[in-house]
Image (cartoon, rainbow, N blue to C red; front, side):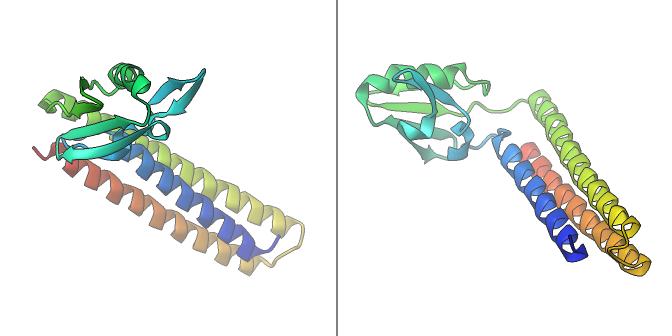
Length: 186
């Protein structure tokens, strides 16, 4: 394995850690509605559990209301129950063949709790990035021990991996700051 390959692999995995954080942060509810909010909700469909967006069209009715339109009318009650039972504290109501899902306003206390959750997610992402740095450096040291690279190359590569780590940790901090601002906006 070449040094460039070690760096490329580390960077790719760090990028995936940041992407995973972005996905997790998108699930943390702010006062506004967005269609990705129901992505993790599953519904029973002919004996198997499937994501809600495979059996219904999820749309934005207005900034505080989602619309869920099932493709089969017999799924209306199951969809309504799945949204009600998910851990988001939502209270959907069926109107004809459309389920309206209003976003309840967030209390100050709930906002603070969500910020703690967001910070925990961010810390987990930072730990993941640092673990990737540790693994890459261990691989470099192993290459040096096996005389696959020079000490200078190994040292230079360690510095570059540290810079990558710093860049991705800063990106994580930026994402957390943005989400915190979003949560505190009324």
